[in-house]
Image (cartoon, rainbow, N blue to C red; front, side, top):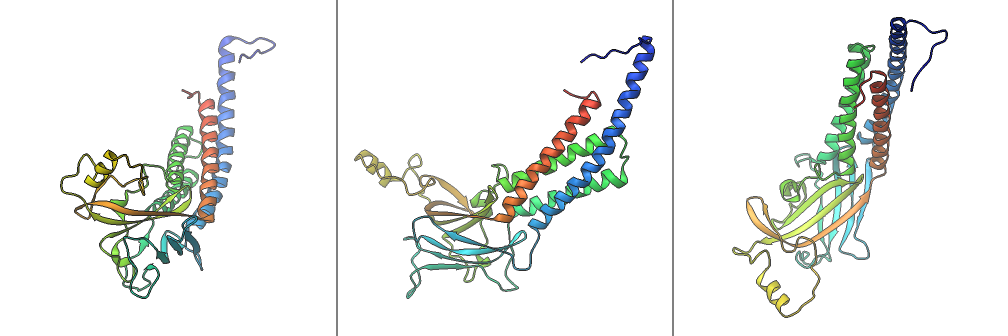
Length: 300
């Protein structure tokens, strides 16, 4: 876009006027960004509150669709799961005598380990980091220094994005089940050695995966058992029971196969709200960064 000045002024004076105009525009924008930062702080405090422990916690129902394989609930308080009772019906985990289900109950004893959700811990830490960045941008650093504010907005955007990824459950933040399964003594009675309980966040929902395990064959034939190979040769079209049926995993220093796998999802309204707010805040910061880059003539 070109500009014209009438009556015409000398080129040197025109350059001075353009520079002065850009300086005034930059000062105005930096002032507006301070107001934006305060609005962002209020939004981040709302997100932090959604991930903070509440008086009664959030009780989430767990249930497999169209089956009685798994029924139960968990209670989330902030970044921790403080209660939980799951009733499981799978052939590879027979229930105790006199019971119709195998019950997995999270221990409430003070001596029991705490069941934390690493993605929620990370998201909450990143949100607190964002709040610190805003405080530094407002009170400690030079609020009218464009380069300083540009760097602070970049840090803010990166931390917001990472916090949202933790609630979204991006592939790089979801832990592998065989590396981060819940400790057996978190439950009462403790989990059997052949059961792995995995809990994580995906699309702002709590997902629970329970696997029953068996030792891996010493010499697997290209990942398939001898029974599976014979079945294929005979033309069997049996559908695998789960997506890990032909895989071998290293679990607690042993090679194992997954015999049965149950996966359930429970929507968490607080996490859904927090992720939506983080997305909106991230968009606001992106707009502020773009506006500042344009005025600073720093657009790639």
